[in-house]
Structure formats: C-alpha cells, structure tokens
Image (cartoon, rainbow, N blue to C red; front, side, top):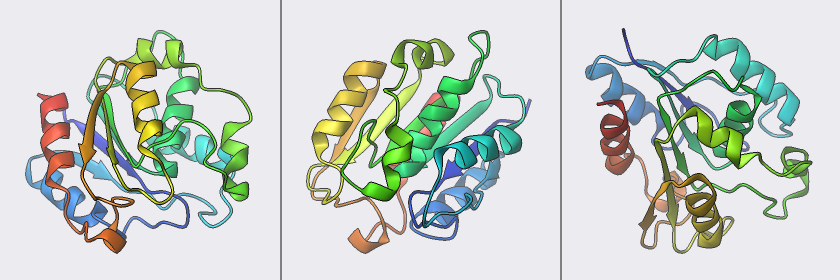
Length: 185
C-alpha cells in the first residue's frame, strides 16, 4: 500500500512557497504519493471551506495517510482529524509553527470558534510531532508546548527559526523529512 502525504500550507500561503516543494520532491523520491493542494481562499480562510476541501481531497484516510502542516495548515489538519469518525485512523502528522488556539489575528478567528477535541484527535493516531521555533513572531513557543501536552506529541524546538518559512531561510526542512520518514516506518 503506497503511503500518502498531504502538505497543507498556512494563511496567505501556496503549495509552491516555503519548503513545501522541496519536501514534496524528497518524499516522492522515496515512493510516497504527495499532495500539496492550494487551500481555498488562503487570504481570508474559512474553517468550513478548508475542512470540506481536506475531506474531499483526502478521501478515505488510513494508517498509510500522513499530514504535514505549516502554521494555519496545522490547525486545519487538527480540525480535519476532529471531523473523522472515531473508528478511523491516520498514520500521523507533523505540525510546524503550530497553534491550537487564537493567536490574535482577526481573519483567522473562525478556526477557533470551539476548543479542539484533543481526546478524539488522539484516538486517530499516537504519531504526532510538533515543530516550533523559540522566536516565532506570530506563534509563541507556548503554543507548541500546549500541543505537546494535549496530544502527547513529540516537540522539536528550532532555535532562532522564526516562523519556519522562507522569510527565515527555510527553503529546505530536513527535520520534517526525517520525522515523517520515522512516522511512516
């Protein structure tokens, strides 16, 4: 069974930005089927639209389905996990520059109308890795620590990594590749 990876960009993002094309290419070389979709309405994202789009493109998830999210893409993945039936499983997720509650950006508030259901999310997989930096101007490290605690996830802290995007020099992100290969093995 071929392993699938979905790379989900963040607010105002595209599949061609940051380290996503590099990661997609590296995973495809290793035999993964990789999708890095353009999420709908990335400038004014609506949680309902993102959730419906993820449900449509993923189809039926299973233990060979993995997710990588950046920033808002991470909360979108968690909201998607929350929407799955309790009997479903996923292979795991890598959440980068991740947060699970409001970071004070008005246009993103609709993703936080309700608190996340961490208990149900944890039933889908026990393979979760959160990667945050210690100087992200948008997402304080405390958000990564909260996700580590709530999900029982492994937390990797990137010193002086900023928002873990090209603006901070992240055109490649070997630690994400390494962690997804560990989850998938």
